[in-house]
Image 1 (cartoon, chains in turn red, yellow):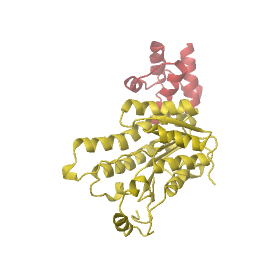
Image 2 (cartoon, each protein chain N blue to C red):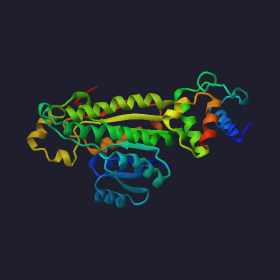
Image 3 (cartoon, rainbow over the protein chains, first blue to last red):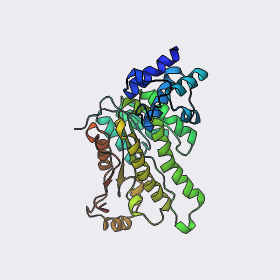
Amino acid sequence: MSDIADRVKKIVVEHLGVEEDKVVENASFIDDLGADSLDTVELVMAFEEEFGIEIPDDAAETIQTFGDAVKFISSAS
Amino acid sequence: MFDLTGKNALVTGASGGIGGEIARKLHAAGATVALSGTREAPLEALASELGSRAHVLTCNLSDAASVEALPKAAAAAMGSVDVLVNNAGITRDNLFMRMSDDEWASVLEVNLTSTFRLCRGVLRGMMKARWGRIVNISSVVGTTGNPGQANYAASKAGMVGMSKSLAYEVASRGITVNCVAPGFITTAMTEKLTDDQKAKILTQVPAGRMGDVNEIASACLYLASPEAGYVTGTTLHVNGGMAMI
């Protein structure tokens, strides 16, 4: 697993308080990991800080799963 | 009684009577304060009166870019914004039938839209801290209406609905959002009223007197305090009984 994926996973595990093995490629933040809409905003904020990137609102809306997040951050950073 | 030691508070309209007193009250409770307003001289005077833990940040609330920059400047000066008091407000009174689009828009822009933008600007830090207090200064006329003040009353009522919606969204993050709605308070603005006008107003006030700025500031201090952590989405009316709502 890439360094980016590890760092994203760490944020997700810490923020949502879920088991690490639940955070898989297709895991939906809301449907599978118990996030509410405000959690997803906070996750995006945490990603922005961790990776020093800007995630615009329209891009943030497309980040639904752990895999989406890794893919977006990989291409942006 | 209420201790805000270590908390950082941004107060808008701090050059005015009510805002200045709010800043004094929060400062006396131990908070560091950022004093915002359009006129620098009274802000500097208040800052030197307070001594340490006071910063001056001038801002024109009718300018979107200045408003966006204010929370960042406050966080840079103090380290964070834990308490936001949106107190700044303007009036452009006119009869409804004579009210211009500009009179309407300028009041909504400063009183309501800037409050929205400032709330949005401080939320990120408060969410991360899992603690925040937003106190929006509304008005009794936002609930009762007032002839000649359709724009002002709309802005103050809008503040209440906005605050409740935001309170819903961020309650689980330890952030409370409330309003304080003053009635007739003795300030430079009401000093201009004639004795006849004052006497007429006071017939509507069961307490039989105008309110003091200290009484508004005390309400703000309570809502900003750790003790008020379970109070959110409410409006605290401070009006001597003129409207019991």
